[in-house]
Amino acid sequence: MSTVVTPSPNMRGDLTLIDAMLDEQGDLTAVERFTQFHEGEQAPLQGGVYSSLLPARTPGPGQQYAFEVDLDRCSGCKACVAACHSMNGLDEFEAWREVGLIVGAVAGLPVLQHVTSACHHCLDPACLSACPVDAYEKDPVTGIVKHLDDQCFGCQYCTLACPYDVPKFHAKKGIVRKCDMCSDRLGAGEAPACAQACPHEAIKIRVIDRAEAVAVAESNSFLATAPAANYTMPTTRYLSSRPAQGPVRAGDHFRNEPEHAHVPLVVMLVLTQASAGGYLVEAVARATGGNVPTILPWLSLVVGLVGINASLLHLGRPLYAYRALIGLRHSWLSREVAAFGLFANVALAHGAALWFRPDWLGLSAAAAAATGLVAVFCSVMVYHVVHRPFWRGGRCGLKFFGTSIVVGLAGALATSGGAQRLAVGLAAASLAKLAFETSILMHLRDPQMTPLRRTALLLRGPLAKAVALRLGLGLTGGVVLPLALATGAVPAAAAWVALAAVLGGELAERYLFFAAVVRPKMPGGLAS
Image (cartoon, rainbow, N blue to C red; front, side, top):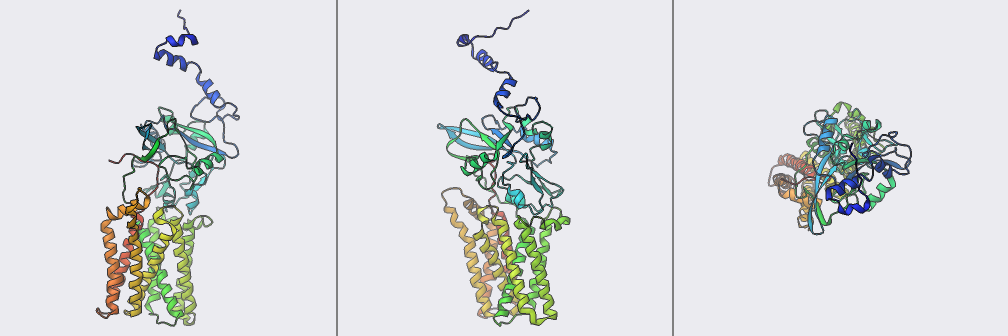
């Protein structure tokens, strides 16, 4: 028979390091530690079943579930990524949880801090407010933000709106998918797959006060190098006993790559704005008693309808495009769809007036121009509200309305046979727009690696050929040929070449609009 001897406090100075650590661990049992942590809490979640990864109770009023990540415990092993991938049946290159790095220093010593992140189940989710089909819902009790796969039609707008790069588009399924905190497992009293798989218990589920998340967001103390938290108010809590001091940066801070260009949206935006510009030029001409070529309104109508239908090619599930108006109260994408639908109908009515009611043409042209410009404004807001500096209102508005004016003038010039006043106006508008677009390169002088400096570096580097194409087409079609037409140096037919060059230049500009924007996200890994 053996006897276990427990050292008394006055004996601990005589213990070896291993014995002292074992003695310290024996002070409290696992159940006692759990009880101490949750002291004073009521309504146990699991009725007495112990788990250090879960809260002891369900959220009350003004509270919700949230991830709690102990950065000191995270080793970057990516067991959480593998578990999430396996539990949710994700494809090879699909991930709902990722592990990044923060590089900094503590007391003069270098630090490499791993950061595991997934959906932050924000208080004001940008994905939810942006979605035009209401494919997101925030549970009023748990606060978990869920994606409704059956409702999604694959517009991918939420992937642009989320500042943390959480929703992921699945091209084969044609929908977006994301983390839901393993809500089914939580409902059964089990921890999410990522939390249960972590060998260091770095990920836990806790109940937090929503006011606490608001305070963290307003104090900008969410996580160093992460996007500003005051946009969506994320609820994940990152803990560390040794926060980095001095300047820190994400592991992929110096990685700068072009984004996906969304070609169907490039075509849609340019053609719809060109159509609105054509009607604007026509409406002004009719109001001032100018000559309006018969072909101009028909050209504007065809170009606009082609542009609107091109947007369907961007949807993962185009058969469900009719759902786009569901989010009209909160989504600018729904408002854009509604505005372009109205614009198309007014443009068709204007076409009918051309045949049957010539006395209505002034009014119908003005209505087509007005609805077209409202639709273009909605397009501006679609990108303005996602908080990317390269897409903010003033910059985006000058580009979109500038496209309407430049292509509208080019279309009028071509259909009028090269009118001198139109040629001079087109040259002036094109020069102004090109000068504004190239002004972004001034941010190369920014002392910090700001998003706009990153955009400028992309335009000067990987996207330099596209920039050269844009400038070449814009100058040729928008400046050189119009001035040559104004002086009679080239035949009138060159106006159609100018229109084609201007249109090509605007398509190149819109390609750069998407490819050169900087995508906000959580810290990534070291660049190779």
